Image 1 (cartoon, rainbow, N blue to C red):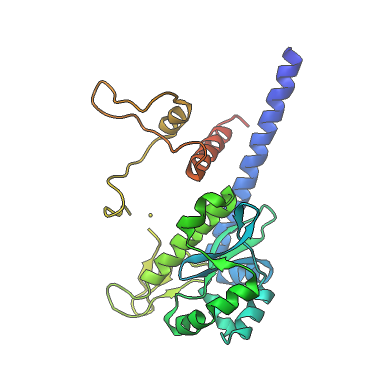
Image 2 (image 1 turned 135 degrees about the vertical axis):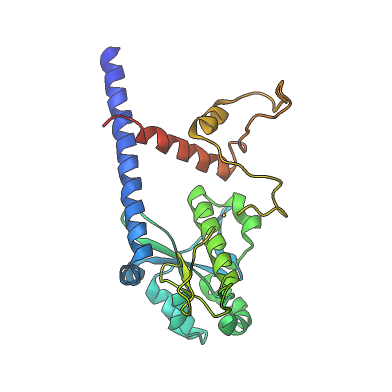
Length: 263
């Protein structure tokens, strides 16, 4: 019994160490791409692109779920050329993640930029036919996507929306310019740097708060009905297990546990 337990513990420790090591490596790589424009441009050469139109991702139907197709830089350049758009349009793409093999993932919206949106709208049906998919509102497709695609597309949509809303400096009124990765925008006239910021939108949320790792871990273990406590408050409660947000929270808790294990 003790030998079996010892083997099981070593296997769990090895799995946690490997997960943590991969996470750290990916984080460092993404940080490099966000800070180094040349490195990010190089990553685009071998990277993959998710396509959007007016914040709606391109999706393909497979059985009873949606798949988010990815396109190489060469495929994207051919598509843009076919529909009369300049390859310079790729500069509007944003970095949204990478694989364990350090294949960078980007997102590009073909319908947001004002200088291209009219022609992009005119070609939207033809684009969908060419790409064998449809541009579908993310909120309508979210629960028919796998966890990875749902997370990536949500990140991409939020980042694309932020860039669309921050094209001008709030102080000078001059156009701002994004870096290659899309992790910031800079006003050339005064060098003010703008970063994406997830603020509480009181029109959509009643409140928001920070929770510690222990709070979240306890909530994951909580079972039973959602009842009011003696002090009149309600306990911190998580989304149901079938929700993508639940799986993302659970993954975060497990990563924190792994990182706290002794070396």
